[in-house]
Amino acid sequence: MAKPRIFISSTYYDLKHIRNSIESFVDLLGYESVLFESGDIPFSHHDPLDESCYKEIEVCHMLVLIIGGRYGSKVSSEENTLSVDELERHYQHFNSITKKEYETAIHNDLPVYIFVEKGVSAEYQTFKENRENKTIKYAHVDSVNIFRLLDNIFAQRRNNLVRDFENFEDISVWLKDQWAGLFANFLSKKSTESNLKSLSKQLKNLDDVTNALKDYTENIIKTVQPENSEKIINETNEKLRHNKDINIFMENQTIKHLLEKHDADLEELFNSFVTSNSFTNFIRKKNKFFPQGENSPALRNGMRARKRLDELREELGLPEWQTPNK
Image (cartoon, rainbow, N blue to C red; front, top):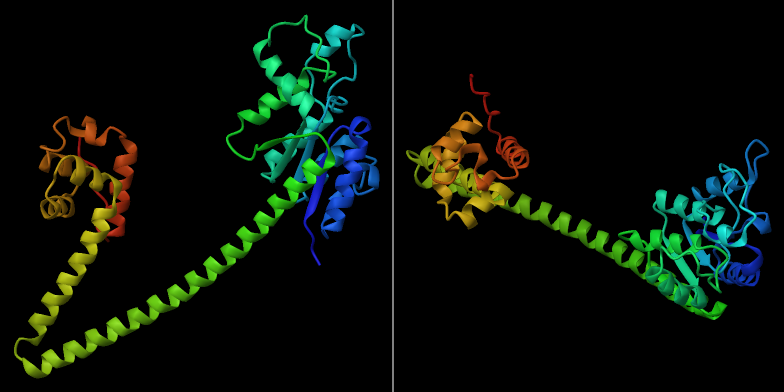
């Protein structure tokens, strides 16, 4: 049976106890934890070790990122040389394996659950007020690159919820709630899909009933008024088609703008649109709505408005607008 595969990303030596606890927690839930120290990653002898980690993330379902006071080793693609000077090393910019694992998960759009030690989180606030000050030696981190990683995380527009933690229980309680919520959302989505299928069947049945009533009504008309039946039926069908086209017409965003902001008459606007053989011709017919022609504020989004009207003609089964001769 397939199980959710959860990659655990962090530096190793300083967070070894947290990694062990998360591994047991994930396995106890019946999921599959993926940690390099547990032999869960097939390492290729052709590539550096960290490259195998990034490839393994691509076949996982989510990533748990634990950020402590150590930034970690450089990625294999960068030269592994650091300045001897401690303060310079503290501020030297480079990419770590943990950072690359996080970026790989984001690139593959995996759900990411991020936890930051409270001491690191508190010091991050100090860093934000002293970014350019390179004389500060932070007590809880070995490199300000940790804070830069947090900058990157918080800059994401989504998938970047961060939780502080002091101990493993802070992590396990929150993960348990989050994963229970995911499961609940999955069940709700399945229920919604089932309801939509049921609604689709009902609409199909309603359509069948409507067609049956239409046929029944036409037969009655042919019996009661045989001499005028064709005319009555054609007029009724034409009215139904017109009403359907009007409804489609009103849903177009550009038409909505004209109706709501310019107080346009619906039937007049519809007739002008249908009878115009070019975009320019349509604008000229309705010059009270487009006093500046194609540069009118009503068409300020230019190509988008034109594209919407082109799509509307196709939806209504009208021929494409002709290109005017220059």
